[in-house]
Length: 212
Image (cartoon, rainbow, N blue to C red; front, top):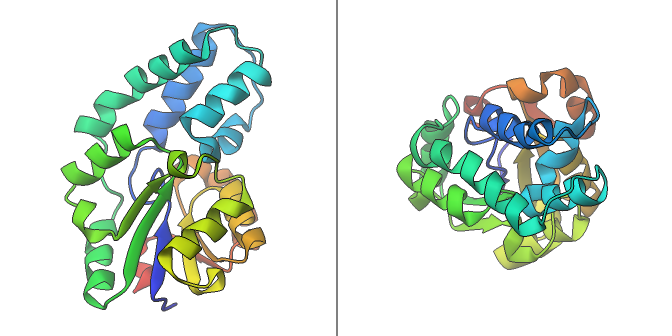
């Protein structure tokens, strides 16, 4: 599996942040007595905070001003991204070797720059990437096939020549629809969807060292 251009998800792919994300997002619903489906994490993960806020308000019926909801999300998440969330196993070493081989490494995530940038810098990963994008930069989500096409265009690469890596089934399926090569990534938070992810993606890895 050798590519010249890589596009990485962030949460659950590069960093072990999904337990923090899940607990923070569900905490808001629980505190406000809002019922939700069993697979809600699978639904909201590709949406980012803004998209998740819209889903909470428009689909689940949470009664709260959107500005307050986004502020609460940020408050619950910020400390962990700034101080405690670690890189996943073998991620940094693998990225360093891919970079040394001349590969273009890039990030496309639903996370906002506020937490994304601080976490990458703290972990010493910031300088490894050529482009670091939040979905906010495209004014859409990873549930929109167009975001992958636009990212490839910005990278100066045909969409089918970019390898997109993500732990989320919905994001991987959408990237496939957009024409990207896709590699599913194992994360304990989505372990129950492993077989589905394998059926969607062109490749699948349990550990980043497999990219080498």
